[in-house]
Image (tube, rainbow, N blue to C red):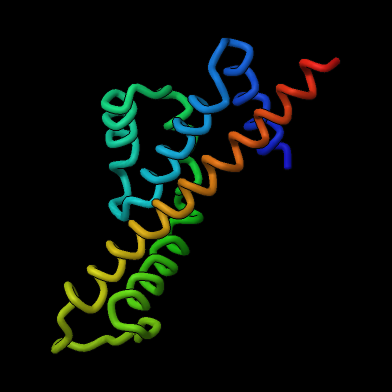
Length: 144
């Protein structure tokens, strides 16, 4: 829980620096989307590039990418593969180890599709939650 309180304090510092709840929430949502790109090790470069293109706060985008880390990445890939296979084939992924399997269509496409779906979905959720929380916090502090 100490990690989350530090994360909260870090985000609240940006409000004090004049960033709006929309700017903070959008930056965080971009980071969450980048975190679901299934190529481990490229998140930082992609996050900086997208922050520059979309003109959002680079530090907050990088902060959002931290939901993908070496501990959570295997679970993200597994859930992405399951969601992708459910969308592409209508069933959960069947794990096979065989020389005759087409790894591109059996594993890679479901991971890519699932990662895109989860990335977009969780980005929207993180945007909405962050914006609502920051607006409520700002309204509470303005009335005091």
